Length: 429
Image (cartoon, rainbow, N blue to C red; front, side, top):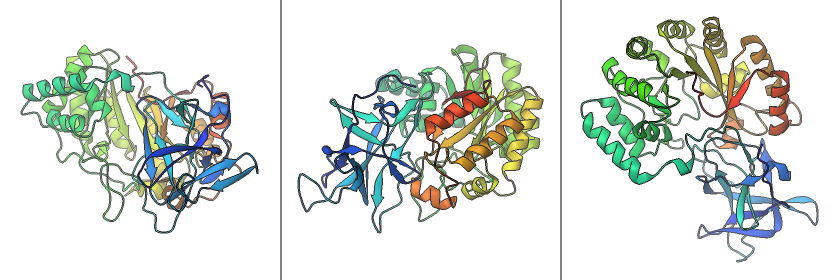
């Protein structure tokens, strides 16, 4: 993990009624593990990665550690303006970084559900913000420094003008210019991984779905694709990208769509067309892996890899989050087995929430799944969801003290030395 750590614990940061973020040196920053405040170690903290954002959390009081009393303290009011409010602050960290602790706060009555982002502990010391994260992938494909907006705008508009009748390219243009999707931006910049959304429908009702939310909940963060692209539209995106880009990947299954396996017929035809045109690059599928028969069909067509999204390795917790229609975690396991029998690459897109992910029961279940199904890689993706809402959704009951994310990861690496870890889909060709 990162070797750059603070010399002493950073100060608590909070936001005043005007939304200004202020540090409070009388209290040290705290983190949270499954909602329980805890004190980070220095090794848990790195400078806030470039491209991260700070969020003010409505209806939530900051929690910090008082070194004088040795106790956690709820900051009831702004220390600089007694009688006025103080709100908790969290970091939404840049891609390729995984949280060790969530932000620590006390939720007040009537507080709104937080939007669909991850909320990481953050503090202030030595003239900079520090976050409780580690760099989980050295790949720079979504680093802030790799994007220059003027070039993105120019390249995107050029491509949109070149393909006015390709609905998929036009859709990706909106993802790029309206939502700032890193995968779409990289497609228009002609590099690394390109997205291939295909499915307007889904066979799950994920509580934390970022493209379609039920009325009365927090809003989705982007629009879902409203059509099924044709094979021609897909290959116009994919073939040029695979043939010309370094470490090229094209991926079905994006945040702006439902479940791609529901469009397995058109995807299989598109994969065969891609491989007829070029042998370069990696063809990947991001999926809930609900239809093993369709996965087998795609493997036969030439699919190189699958990334199986998973909030939990326990059947009941998986079902409570995904709210699946006609499948369960067992179908996802079988899809992994199908791909492994075909000699293909399997990643788990494993959502990380400190205190839940490293709970002893969850850890035991994950070890058992890895032992049985033998995936090749785990992508350590932060769970983008209000932590309290998530814990209530999956009816979390601690099986014991959480291991700690660093110890949890070290245990996996020790138990499964051939298992890879990262954040992104790795290029295979």
